[in-house]
Amino acid sequence: MPKIIDIIINRLKSEDEESISLALDKIEQLTDVTDADKIALASSLTQLFYRDHVGMSEMISLANRAEKQITRFGSVLIPFLIDELVNSDAESCAHLGRVIAVNGANAITPLLDAWNKKRADQYALINLTQALAYFRIPEVLQTLPEMLIAAGSDNFQLSSNAINAIGKLVVRIDPNLFDEALRQQMFDASFSHLSDSHSLVRMQAARTLGKLMEKGLLTNAQQEKLRAAYSAILGKDENNDWDDAYIVRHEAKRYLPLLKTTPTSVAHYQQSFRIISKRELCAKTFHYIIEAPLIARKLQAGQFIIIRPHEFSERIPLSICGWDSEKGEIEVVIMSAGKTTVQMNEMNEGDCFKDIVGPLGERSHVRRYRGTCVVIGGGFGTGAIIPTARDLKALGSRVIGVVGARSKELLIMVDELEAVCDEVIVTTNDGSAGIQGFVTNALEQIIKDEQRVSHVLAIGPVPMMQAVCELTRPIGIETMVSLNALMVDGTGMCGACRVSIDGETKFACFHGPDFDGHKVDFDQLTKRQKMFVAEEKQALETL
Image (spheres, rainbow, N blue to C red):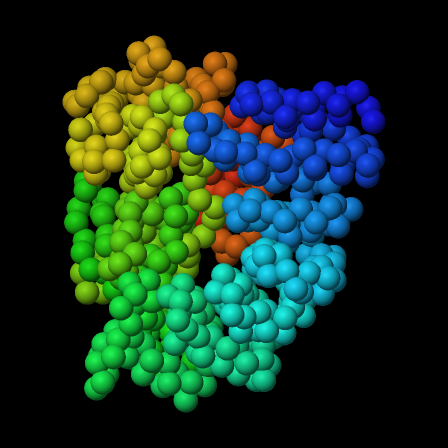
């Protein structure tokens, strides 16, 4: 074994977070690693999954990095990883399950072999069902017969895990791949557990049945049967015999309205996208609250939507500035810049957008930092930083917000940002409010005043984000930016939103929209943003 491998393994055993981080950096630089070395490194990396995270604020992040490094080593690790999986604790099982799932079809047969060997070990089967729930490939359907058997186990943990895994696969696999017999089996197995003695099993059964309904896998008769069951759980039937467990009632309450209003198997996808409220923030810029319950239920900070106001309009990506999953509402800020955004801002309360797709993209880079976090919004970007600021604050980080605009009249959502930050600093180019100057002037002062700045997020015009990155680059402050590249489909298929990150091509809609600002090729981004200026101007003139 090379000396460098020994050094890395010894560093991974350390209790010092910085030493572990350096070891992970070294692994990223390794090339031509033998299979034996891969197994040795993976053995040490997996130990990070078992560490006690209490008092080690960055340990979760390090464990996630370790997870990504293990995936680099490929399918040679599958036997080792499965051996680890069947004996792991619940939290480590999640890490190991994700790593195994990355190997796709190569891992299915070894997992089934492990299932047969461990059939008498219910603890091992619990972990195996959890790992199978992370797969997104059709081949995983080979494991459904075993999971359906596990769903009938007397062990409530195995039963609930198996039913939960079935529900996750229903969401992740093409509905057309489930034949009629399999659909019936999944419905029967889940429905029978609505009366299980353990509330956790009942909750997973109610949830999986809801997912089966959402994906259009239930017949009308099954939907009616499920509607009656949810009504009973909520105490709305004639017998008034409802479930007293909140977690079960929560799932029934979540799905019953969809069953009541959707008599067919596809109508559950229909959302009105009705404008609930509209208010002017400043000239040509409006804040909207839109009815979109299925999107609101899944949103995370940093993600975005693509919206189309009319049947023949283009599709516009928009950042999310807030949402209410209980009310089924999302919030966006729309600034009139081109033809489509002008058309959007001509709509009023009660009007409905033609369609909205989302949530799209990856969630923001969020964890608890030892030092101060600074979130910077320029113009329309102010709304977009609010969800991430809220999450950073909730994790216990100190958060300072910076809002920049050309003048006082163009400042937006300062009050909303103040509600989720420890402090907010305003800058205006003309000095009509706050500090006269740019957001970088405020950031320079924060870096001087704060004991340590650990993280910066900047969202807004490309020149502003680039200026922030040039300021933080020499002093090594982690800086994320949200790239508003030109988009078409929003799923990574068309390639229109490609950006260069550290010399590699990435897609802003799929890999982003947040990226390490120090690795972004801003010159290329700026050029691509100007590709259709003439066409945009021409379209605007046709209004």
